[in-house]
Amino acid sequence: MSYYKIENLEQYFKHYNKSIREPRKFWGKIAEENFTWYQQWDKVVEFNMAEADIKWFMGAKVNIVKNCIDRHLARRGNKTAIIFEPNDPKEQAQHITYAELHQRVCKMANVLRDQGVEKGDRVCIYLPMIPELAISVLACARIGAIHSVVFAGFSASAVATRVNDSDCKMVVTADGGYRGNKTIDLKGIIDEALQNCPSVKKVLVAKRTNTAVNMQEGRDQWLQPLLDEASDNNVAEIMDAEDPLFILYTSGSTGKPKGMLHTTAGYMVYIGYTFKNIFNHEENDVFWCTADIGWITGHSYIVYGPLLNGATTVLFEGIPSYPDFGRFWDVIDKHKVTQFYTAPTAIRALAKENTSWVDHHDLSSLRLIGSVGEPINEEAWHWYNDHVGKKKCPIVDTWWQTETGGVMISPIPFVTPTKPTYATLPLPGIQPVLMDETRTEIEGNQVVGSLCIKFPWPSIARTIWGDHQRYKDTYFSTFPGKYFTGDGALRDEVGYYRITGRVDDVVIVSGHNLGTAPIEDAINEHPAVAESAIVGFPHDIKGNALYGFIILKEYGESRDRDNLRNEINQHVSSHIGAIAKLDKIQFVSGLPKTRSGKIMRRILRKIAEGDFSNFGDTSTLLNPEIVEEIKNERVG
Ligand code: 6R9
Image (tube, rainbow, N blue to C red):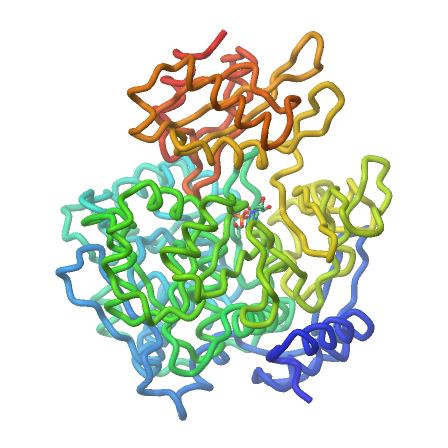
């Protein structure tokens, strides 16, 4: 019996139980039957949760890129591995076959080696969503260099912090990048960043926008001529199971960014396995994840997961609103996408527009649709289900984190019955528990608590680069012996999980524990509201009171503000209870968001408190200008 694919609910429970009772047998069998190894492991897993010391497949020798590309060549050499869909729909899409990908990755790997990159060296990749990005990632992994992809929307200072934190030796970038009708001066940003980065000796520059750039003598080189010269014969590095694969900095909604370190074999096995099951992958599918490779979602489910399964993956350079709000639906139709995976923030933005944008496209190729990144509110879930999935495609609401490497809680499509706003059940191997304030595990169903995981899974991050103590403190000390996710969750009467948001987004009002996410859900259901964010602020009598920052739809903008405030509060009262009424409501034109679409609540909390002294690191904000507006119009 194979454990690689879950076919029905009975099998899910069978596999799940096996994975808990005999994790070593379960993962050992999956690893053995579905991947190629130079040498097998001695032990499947070894761990000490108190020390945050976790090792999978110790003793094994493997190369993840051999598994992503080389082993498919005989059977799938002419199959499309990557479909590159450019920013401008008038520019032709590219279909890169497995054979061509192999050749291009081998050349890039040889260029890196020629430029002095060795196994274990860190390479910062700061590229737009073009094929060179995926190719650079794979080339690093092929020669055992540790890639650190920095999203090509980060500022120079954010890049410098990340480059210095991990002492990168090289930066791979481009002259510029396209984003809708804008051109971003990537090389200029790198030049500025590198003024403060002594470790970087070489910069390779891909050409994308043909923007004029400065090339620093002795440091900078154009990539293409080096690739043209390079041989396409490359012997992959033989890696130990626990050799580092990549560093990825978390989006940084709190504190200094953390360089999460992922290692080779466990990540490979878990990402291959989860891609197969969560997206119900079949041979002729065209899979599209709209994330950027600069985030964990792009690492795991644009590059590694699809390629490990010999799939066809779409790499989209553009944005959902360019050249118009029909772009996503146009791409689905054009490439006959079978699985579409996006974020609630994009869904809500598109749901604000006229439905004819989506209704006028042929989306009949879709078999399932997915969501990731934040809790999906009820209204967005239904819009996604009705207009995109046409009520025929299961929605996989996938909960996971940069730290977890792969999806942890999610429906298995066509297997797990879905429920709006619920991520539903843990994947095999994942043991979630809910904890109360006294650090006791909460048993039973219909309960709420802090979400922890009590047994290691193969793709858990192994450390924070250069700071194992911080790794232990952040994830393994709040609830000793367990991995603490930082999220709160609810477990319903059948054991389904609903992630309610970060635990620090819980506000205690008059002794009642209020999650801000359900209140926001209720507010967002009001017909005049486009989006909202709720934070707590200190209150003499209640301890804390609620402050709402609300974006109105056009429809609401012409209405009397005080009437709207009353209506919104009545809505909250009737949906959650009078206790959840907002003391203050400020209508805003936008919310401060990180580039991955997460609201930076820390800033809103400070504004609500009237403390404008120190907003901390705002370098990861997409729209820093909004902070000033919100500050000036604060409701005192
Ligand atoms: C993959 C990714 C992780 C945080 C996580 C949680 C939130 C992600 C979610 C979700 C509810 C989902 N989150 N997916 N919350 N439902 N389906 O987004 O990684 O950028 O590290 O963010 O995102 O709060 O803790 P990352």
